[in-house]
Length: 105
Image (cartoon, rainbow, N blue to C red; front, side, top):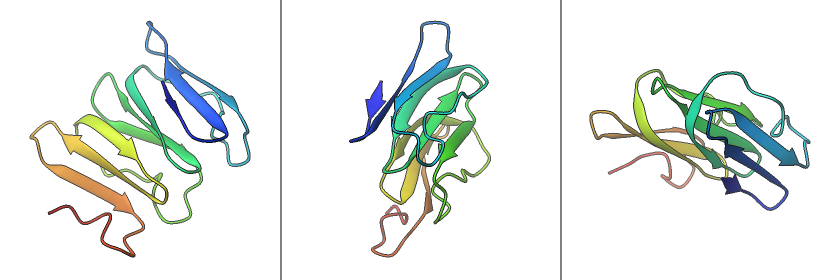
């Protein structure tokens, strides 16, 4: 389960995403596929599918909901950016980078 101030999503035991709350930008829309984790950003969500890809939904004004391809272990959605740990152990980020938040060291 991951929550922001106005909406929440969780992953069921069967791997489905369930979301509820305020739906101004499609954050609580039904999503297909099977997931192993989910993370709430400011107005978007991202989740890691069981196959390792990242899917994001909701607001995408700065590319925060446009993940790169590849296989990921985890993902963490921020306000206007998102970062994930790849299967190889490196960090990839996407979205707004005004203060370097999407430029991992």
